[in-house]
Image (cartoon, rainbow, N blue to C red; front, side):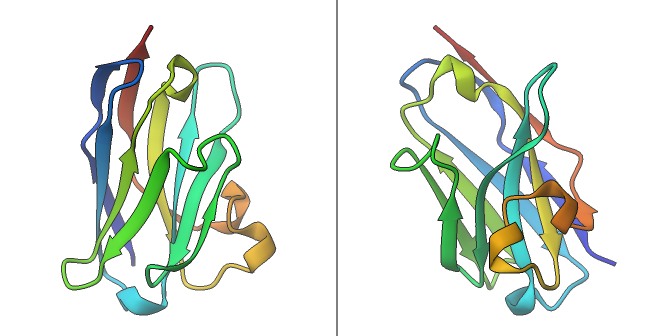
Length: 125
């Protein structure tokens, strides 16, 4: 059973930065595909970024060049560094994981079995 716990959310002004973390336990970490998703009120959950063993990174077009996903394999932690935040980035951010996800599905929420509880990000203009 994989367990995920997010932290690091908060409130920032547009243009600011936040770093989210996701502590993972209960899985052979190196073989797990992990991702960040977000969901704003009234909108569907969308994939933000994904990685497998800190490689084969994928980003949504809306965050390319501003967000960076990374893994600390020793600490079993997934991070999301978010820079140049915009009001439209405000959402609940979720960490997700599964043991194998095809490349084409890595930003689809239906591809992941394990989810954290989420951490809120608020961006004011």
